[in-house]
Image 1 (cartoon, rainbow, N blue to C red):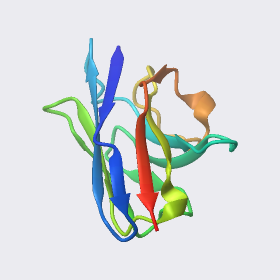
Image 2: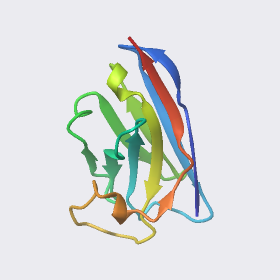
Image 3: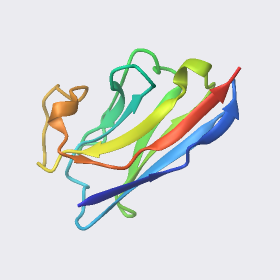
Image 4: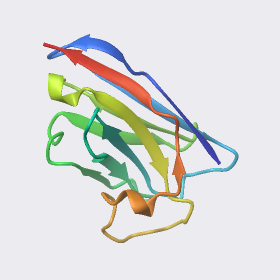
Amino acid sequence: VQLQACGGGLVQAGDSLRLSCTATGRTVSDSALAWFRQAPGKDREFVAAVNWKDMSYYGDSVKGRFTMGRDNDRNTVYLQMNNLKPEDTAVYYCAADSATHYSGTYYSNPRMYDIWGQGTQVTVSS
């Protein structure tokens, strides 16, 4: 399985962006997928995840502003980012768990995901 992320760019504070991540090689409709981000000099941070039941989870810093969804027909997940802030500036990575039907609680742990995309840069100017 390969993941291809796109949709990043340079925006101003308060703007919106929509990231997409498409999986190729096999269906991911029964797997958990997630978005993480990493800013220069900082650790990788959990942003959002969606499980195979289409339940979503969010990091505290993005709750109420970001929404993650999936389109199983397109084998794609999305991250709608609204009211962007300069502190959202980072490289955003999508990730997938190759296992299926996971219904636990460790969605924010990057070790849960064994397939990673290449990352897309999001820059928010003040």
